[in-house]
Image (cartoon, rainbow, N blue to C red; front, side, top):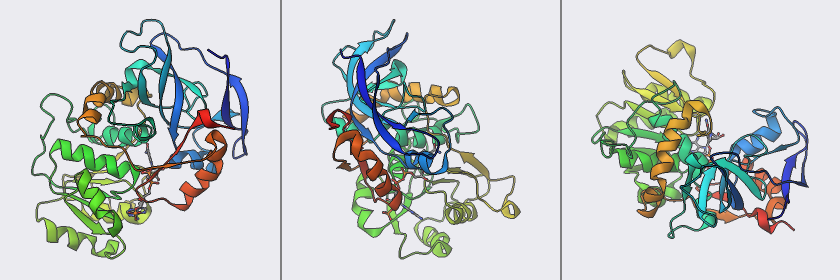
Length: 348
Ligand SMILES: NC(=O)c1ccc[n+]([C@@H]2O[C@H](COP(=O)([O-])OP(=O)(O)OC[C@H]3O[C@@H](n4cnc5c(N)ncnc54)[C@H](OP(=O)(O)O)[C@@H]3O)[C@@H](O)[C@H]2O)c1
């Protein structure tokens, strides 16, 4: 094993990125050392650089999604072997982040990759599946809507016949909300997206795809009523801009829950006690989300193997870690039903 690796470092708050040699971290008790073959880019990565949020210590390694190969086992790890292909979420510390060639991670939030997925595909899953799952299934804190996860006993199909509205179904988060909602039995699964993504989203489990370019948010309530007259008691707003949050809240029926992924932006004047607003925190490393994560990762290999959870579409970023800063600008400009994936070992 080498002792040094290449990491992409954000040198200072809102500063530039640079590739530098850093020490390869050692796995602590219960951890794995993973050689990262693929890391997916997320909006939070460019938001950290642009807005200076979430991270205090610089230089900082960013990156939240990894797929790779287990290189070392920390003390007490029995469920993995050196050489296993795995996927996992990264975290906001240099030893756990993924825009580098090696990272450490607690083994309880890692899953083996079944043969039907490539490493590139697997890297598209962790962060956004966590956001979908924690937002819907966390019962422990106010960051989850408290539904029973479909991988728990009695959870599969439990919510049959209950509608869900997913704003932004073709976003990376939205794609996973659709897939887990299908496993939970929610029906119909109504989502908004560009028309070109309709077939893809139906293949993931959406029953109705409303063209967001043809139906303005002011007409969304009517379009949903044309599909079902059941009260909409669950909305997952995977976009969570001010206008989508307010429209979602208006559509939400009394007694319902809306899950949002950005800061609350619902007009205080329209807030009522009978509608619950849940802020999703898609991170299985933190204590409040850990139980959902551990349970999800215990079942994830089987879900992937069965095709119950599918990866996003992959576009490879050229030049390994070196290509990430430019790719983050592309992500900020907007992608559609697509994940940008870098290969850290291919850094020139
Ligand atoms: N709270 C958390 O822990 C957490 C975790 C992950 C992500 N997030 C946040 O969640 C948001 C989504 O992240 P992501 O990675 O899923 O984004 P993404 O994949 O980059 O989102 C791109 C997609 O957004 C869709 N879209 C854009 N505006 C829309 C609108 N007004 N209505 C419906 N669809 C719209 C586009 O759909 P079409 O191309 O079909 O038009 C496109 O497919 C980001 O703001 C991110 O920072 C939060």
